[in-house]
Image 1 (cartoon, rainbow, N blue to C red):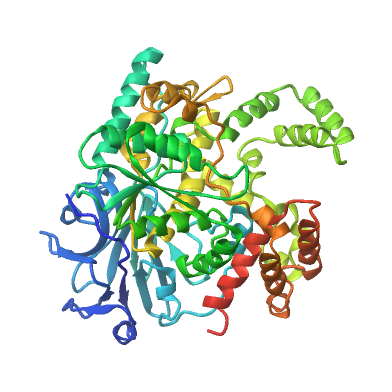
Image 2 (image 1 turned 90 degrees about the vertical axis):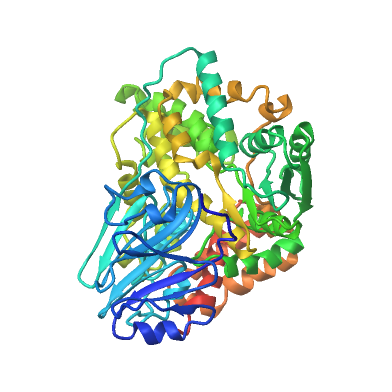
Length: 596
């Protein structure tokens, strides 16, 4: 059993004629004496180094719930025990005298690894920024990655913002040397849906597995850990399960906002007090959010445009102020229990998609006729018939398609000449096709685990916690629990239009009724309101997005951006998410890439 740490450690493992001198100049890292000559390492305090019985050396950052780091031979995906490890890990191993590395990360990539190979050098590192000055590295931006960012709010692995640098894909083993690289997936969520039993029996079994998993992920030290608590069912159930175990009092951290409709602190307080946990509450107003924008640029080693990074950073900071070294989060619950609102919506659209083609065409014609004006209900009809006429994942992609939707207006001809309009859709199609075909709901749940969770949500929480020196655990992404839920048929997740069907039965005596019945809200940010009403934020948006430096970058059309800004500030349309993404992208580029 490995001990938890702050998980703010870094390491670089490099090979090449300039590698040793490069690592010796790395501020904040100390070179590690390998006695090898072919490979060189630089590490921060707390990075673990060991040697296997077969002579292979390893470096690791990990918080394992089950498993021993020195078990891993790291030779191949077929034999490496990471398949059975539980927790978070980023691991690299090598054979002395051989210029080759095996590197792997945990099942959903909550601890990242980045790598490059160029001009006789290669390296593996825990932070992309550690590689920006590596030998042979250029200064070229990957425009396809930028396009993905503008659609997905993040850059999905294996791509990164830098053309020469790649990220190890979640649940995969990378083998890398001077001649070649190979990536092999060792884990993929599967959906055999083979469990039989009554609703009551299966709900009881799910309840027992949830409780056992959350208990396993509880830190063994007292008083120096807490929980994220949004007031939703996932985080509330984790807090309740832990509090009912006994032992030291459980603490929770929650962030709210002054704006009505965005604040869930009352639900967070209710969930904590119902089980005897100690709530710690704080609010983020528009003035603090503007300051946290700079923290987003500091904390994330790539552009990250999900605005909920702001409350996540604030919540991690709240936990750090209470002396917490570790926090537990409810991420993944929606995606394994069936809690996303769009799962129910997609079920209706899937039924529409399966209608005979003439009926769909007639409905689409009606939708196109009545939509496109200023009547919200009629526009929803048009949107439904348009999206319902698409197969998945194309239908699912329409939730994440800002740059695709405005391709001609948003992007310059130079940008469009290098990145086709369907680049992000094709990427999602590739992820959707990973693994065997299964039920429609399970197909999009797996897509969410591989995209929304592994590429977005976990990046958000990990980087926010890392920025404040806090570790984080995700009990509901324990592979054993994910695999168990994959054995439950789709109608146990969404039955009719009822989401979390079995989960709600499983936690009926764990959560207050008010929590179970509350409308799902998520960890949103009232950025739309702030951009319309806060002069300071408005000025920041205009000063960055409409200045000459942004124009000279040559990626986006200045007239279109100015129109988005003016429309939003005037209150006609909500373009806040797009403007936030563009703002973060430009600020990140100025901080880390310009002038290198």
